[in-house]
Length: 229
Image (tube, rainbow, N blue to C red; front, side, top):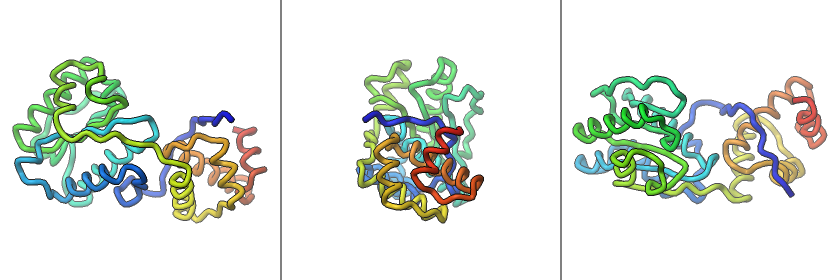
């Protein structure tokens, strides 16, 4: 059976945090980032970068946003860059950390900036947390940036299994005050992509459609939503 990947805006009930990330098979990276946020590594270990890689929907962006939110909660800030095309800022010595997402998509100019950020972060003993789709050795980036991404802690992000996807969907539905019957859960997990982003996006769209139509979330409602969106 072909699972359908739907393109929907991902919305979560509140900011991404380490607490609302479901670790599943990614408990090692979850624990590592908790320690990093708490400043537990020795000072000389803070400049060792962390790189997350794996398929889309495995939680990489959530974790980067969660770390940024964790820093903000304690009054600190981070330098952030992704591949959106926005011009990244100059390195700021007040940053507590550098966060780089989707590095595999960086343009030549973004790669230049990323390398400069690496050099300055290392000189100031500031951590770098980066994410991409491939292992460092397979990234088609300039060599000096690629080797720095592969120098420190490297974690392969694993997609959630069926039982874990079910738990995430149930947890997210409860957070929104939604009831999903076992029948709806089974239908959803059989027919849609199980990656974390798609599940949360689907749930958010179901929530909006149920409110618009003043109906409970049922299999007929899901079918109606797909026919009318």
